[in-house]
Amino acid sequence: MSSNAAVSQFIEKHYRHFNAATLVDAAKGYNSHLLGGGKMLISLAGAMSTAELGVSLAEMIRQDKVHIISCTGANLEEDIMNLVAHKHYKRIPNYRELTGEQERALLDQGLNRVTDTCIPEDKAFRSIQKHILKLWKSAADKKERYFPHEFMYQLLRSEVMKADYEIDPKDSWMLAAAEKNIPIIVPGWEDSTLGNIFASYIIKKEFSPSILKTGIEYMVWLSDWYKKNALGKGVGFFQIGGGIAGDFPICVVPMMYQDLEWHDVPFWNYFCQISDSTTSYGSYSGAVPNEKITWGKLDIHTPKFIIESDASIVAPLIFAWVLGW
Image (cartoon, rainbow, N blue to C red; front, side, top):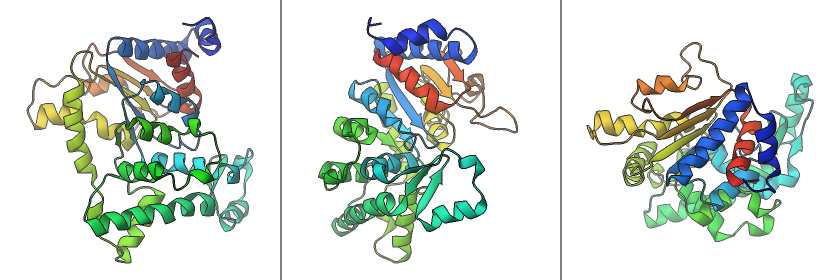
């Protein structure tokens, strides 16, 4: 640890017990996995992009601390929305006190609320829509097919929105990912604003849905990637939140082992989840890591950590440790 690593030194001194101690253990385990030559998958659920996780995640990507990302369609698009419309976002610290009438007033202003932050529909959603539509139509004209993240990479690399950037580009994890060309898995992409917009164009018969590669094709692609990268120290799994962003990619291992009967497939070699979900009522997002042993995802000896806390607080601290900040 560098003598200038103020955040890491603070964590080392003060985070000694309970979830705080697990945070330190998980961060050290992350580092050990990378130092041993392992790769790391990070999954993003919830509204991590709107929470501006890119401030730390982008640097993790640039420094090769992340090798593949699985995220919801919302996180894929909302990092770019923040990139081009940040000054038009509206923060509402007293969101818990809003009446139904006040919520409706926000809607009438074109402000869609995510907890304490409102995303400006016109400046965020619609500004991306007009550009991505051209890429969708171009793919249709050329009879080409792409994954959702590939369309977003095309959008960013075209620099058509560069003049509209309203944050430091270094704080956009999607820009960092596009520059590094790291793979992104986006299961259930249709459950996103751009997914809804895409569906609207299908209904209007603007083009065929076949231009978009599916979630099944993502799983097929991921199986090939995993086989190539699971040698040696293997691949770790760092899960932020729950839901499909984590549930989908972690299943690639039992799919290969059980369904394809490839019995030489290594388990995930590190696992950490930051979540406030509980283990009641069959919640997979709240399941303790040991349950994943029974599903053929983790091994008995896989380093396992679960931090029951707010991911918007915990993830940047772990990233700061890994980055030596």
